[in-house]
Length: 371
Ligand SMILES: C=C1C[C@]23C[C@H]1CC[C@H]2[C@]1(C)CCC[C@@](C)(C(=O)O)[C@H]1[C@@H]3C(=O)O
Ligand SMILES: O=C(O)CCC(=O)C(=O)O
Ligand SMILES: [Fe+2]
Image (cartoon, rainbow, N blue to C red):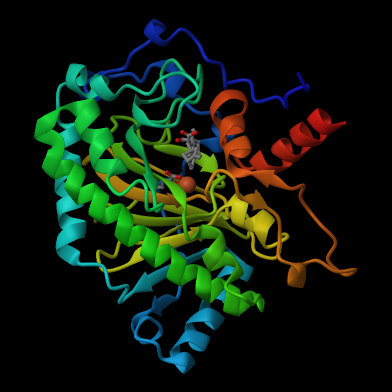
C-alpha cells in the first residue's frame, strides 16, 4: 500500500463512537473541541471583501446566438484564469424548481436525527446522510449536515435519484425524489452547456468536453449549516478545492461562501437568480492545468441556518481523465497522470480528506502505486 500523505484527520473511526445531533449541538454553550479549527484556519467574520465576479448571461448562448456564445466563453475564460469562479444567470432553469428543491431540503433536515439516519452514509461511501462527518474525521469537524446522492445521465438510469431517495427514506419521499431527479437533470444539461463554453475558451474542438461528460455520473449534495453559537471558532465546510470536474452551486439568501483570491478570503454574495460555478480538480487535470481548481470554504453564523445545493459534475466511471491534444505540447507538457474519476473519488473517501492539495497528494499516490 503506497505511503499516504499526512492527512491525519482522515480516519475511519468506529461509526457508533460519536454522533452529534445538530438540533442539540446548537444549544450547547461551548463547542465540542472537535469542532474548533486551528487558529490559522479560523474564519475572520468581519469586513470580508466581496469577490467581484462577472454575472454571465447565458440567454443568448442558450438560444444559439454565436456572438453571445463567444462573449460568454470569453468571460468564462477570464474568470477561470483568475480564480475559477463565475456566476451564470438566464440559465433556463425554472425558479419554481429551485424553490421546491430548497423547501424539500428544509423538510429533510428538520426531521428527527433517527429518521435522517435511515440514509446514514456508510464508511468509505460518498452517498447518504452525514452529520458533521462524525465517525469519519476526528478533528476539524465541519458544522454541517449533508445529504448526498448519485445522479446518472445514462439512458439506463432515468430514475436513479428518485429510486435512491424512495428506497432509502420510504414512499413518502416520492415527491422529494421527483423534484431532485428533475433538478439534477437540469444541472446536467446546464453543465454540458458550460462545457461548450469551456471548449471555446480553451480552443478545444470536436465537442471534446461535452462528449466527455455527456453520460456523466455526478454527485448531488445538499449542505445544511445550522446556526452556531461560536461561528468564529468553526467552519461549515473547510478550505478545499472540489476534487470533481465542475460545481454548480445554488446558495440561499444567507451568505457564507468564501473564495481565496490573492491569498485573501472574499465572499460571494447570494443571488437567487444566479448559480455559482467553479472548476474542480478533475477539470484542472483535463485542461492540463490551464484552468485552476480554486480554494474555497463556507462559514457559519450565530443567527440562522444556511443551505446550499451543490451539483458536482463527474465523468462516467470508465472515462480516462486525459487532456485533449490541443492542450499538450512542448510549452505545456503533461501536468497530471491519466486517471479515472472513481480512483480520485475513492482516494477522497477512504484515504485523504479533500483539502487544498488533493490533486497533488493523489498524483503522488498514483505514481507510487504505479512504480
Ligand atoms: C467528491 C466529493 C468529496 C466532497 C464532496 C464531493 C466534492 C467536494 C468534497 C468536499 C466538500 C471537500 C471538502 C471536504 C469534504 C469532506 C466536506 O467537507 O464535505 C468533501 C466532500 C466529502 O469527501 O464528502
Ligand atoms: O456551501 C457552500 O457555499 C460551499 C460548499 C462547498 O464548497 C462544497 O460542498 O464543496
Ligand atoms: Fe466545494
